[in-house]
Length: 223
Image (cartoon, rainbow, N blue to C red):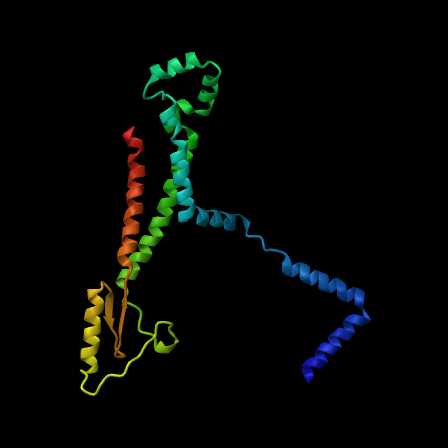
């Protein structure tokens, strides 16, 4: 009964001095709702985390492919200066605009170089942490078997007949079947077998992204 009494006393206090109570309540709500400033380091950290996401890398890759399209439609100065001169004579109005934007030197233009560098940094920042996590996961044993299997959604149990083999032989058979299905298997001290897989898929994903980085490195030297 003490808790309702305290509530009643607080309500009565606010009623006796409603204006002060309302002012205090408004200030308290305003203080709680005001967001904390993350400052410059927090803003830079947020931008970095957004840059190294795979979504940002895909967007930058699409922008890079889109920005390279004018290089195949407009004559390039480093490839065919004669064609550029002919284009300038035939299009006296568009030629100054193209020169100002850099369409005659698409592959060395500042905007394409900016997209290229951002994509390169994004891929490196995404690959390096994931590679570290992947290598640490390879060195670890599969997680131990949960103690309460009944709480798992795929839990099932069965009773073995009296002439069934011993627990050690059953665990060995289970380990062999899991290894045949390309699981990483670990025998635990509590008389259980734990297994996991999926590392080959992650390795293929990392190899793909590393190959993309090597392609980006080789691209400027191909011209």
